[in-house]
Amino acid sequence: MAAVAEEDVAGTAFPSAASKVILLSPNIFSHLLLIFATSSCLVMGLAGAMLPLYVFSSKNQTDFGMGGEETQLSFFGTLLLGQVIPGKYGFLAQLNEGRHLKKRPTEFRVDKVLQPFDGSKFNFTKVGQEEVLFMFEEGDGGQNQYFESAPVETSQRPHGMVAINVSPIEYGHVVLIPRTLDCLPQRIDCESLLLALHMADEAASPYFRLGYNSLGAFATINHLHFQAYYLGMPLAVEKAQTRRIMALSNGVNVFQLLEYPVRGLVFEGLSTLEDLSIVVSDACIFLQENNIPYNILISDSGKRVFLFPQCYAEKQALGEVSQELLDTQVNPAVWEISGHMVLKRKKDYEEASEEDACRLLAEVSLSAERFQEVEEYILNAILGNTAGEAIDTAAPASEEQGDEEEDVRSKQHHGPMLGPEKQEFLVLQ
Image (cartoon, rainbow, N blue to C red; front, side, top):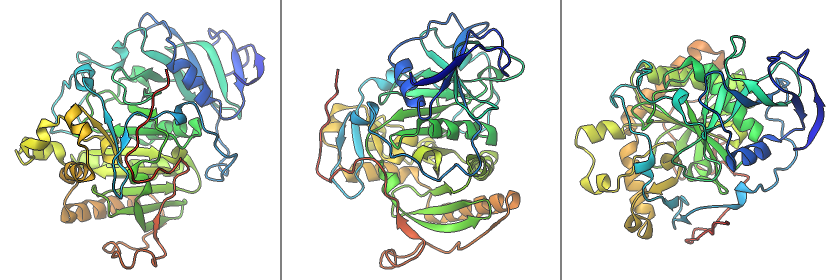
């Protein structure tokens, strides 16, 4: 486990009921996740239970975004399920028959982004004993710690929890539930987003991403949670061109996606995770309060966040989505929007094309006019809460200008780059 020290819990800030604490070396989170994801933690319900606890250190403010050791290819980073669809975007198609039958049913309205928590509906305090992996929270010291056993219920620290996803897409597919026992509804705030950014930072792998779906954007449970899994290749949206439209004095830059089927914004942090969380949560809060469904992708170990306002469910309710697309049974949430097309029918998988993927994603995206309106409101909301400078809010640069514009760029991902030809991947047993 690469532990560097072991000591009793007495004298620490954590519950004395915990058995012992192990001080961890850096970048151990991925190894722990692998161990937990391939085993089970037997818990007879959450109330009064004892669970493993991973405590990440309070990071020095200057550490974020400064780089570090080169990321090594992990076990999860060597496995892919699916095929790369030929074309300029490099979408990944996966056949996952029956996944929609395994998912827990949606038990709330899909036309309202903000809805109160309802304890009578399914929520993560009702998960089975085989689903909970460990608790996850920030500590006060400068060293990561791992408690083999700590009480779930404590008035001092509302624990976040990591559980398996019962209808997984990829290896290591888990769910992060901030402040689990507080029973928060599915809505973003700065604190919960910051916890998700820390999880990405602790994983320290370009292959590990977190995603968030709001209500109305294909979240299926109204209990605050993020999804996360490993995927050993760059997502299509991570390779898309962007143009900077705002720079803030706290080191956060805001970009607009260019020439991608779904219109969206990209937030990039250059100083601290907290600064990035404040800016992105301001944008999310605006969308929530104005009943605009959205999806979030957290990538680059928490350094970049993609934000996609979307309208597919609204179009579906209005009868504006073609029957051909409806027959695919694909609900375009964060993973599909980012370029990981999870298909339900073998026919769709075998005939997958970039044209089909773009046709689906085009129905997700806001129109150019509507997106520009929403973007302006988001930028104003950010500026109203953060000292910053708007560099440019004009229309995107043309294709001809793209390579010459100072703020137009294509982000290079650290993962293995794959060619446009169709490729198959083997699953190691």
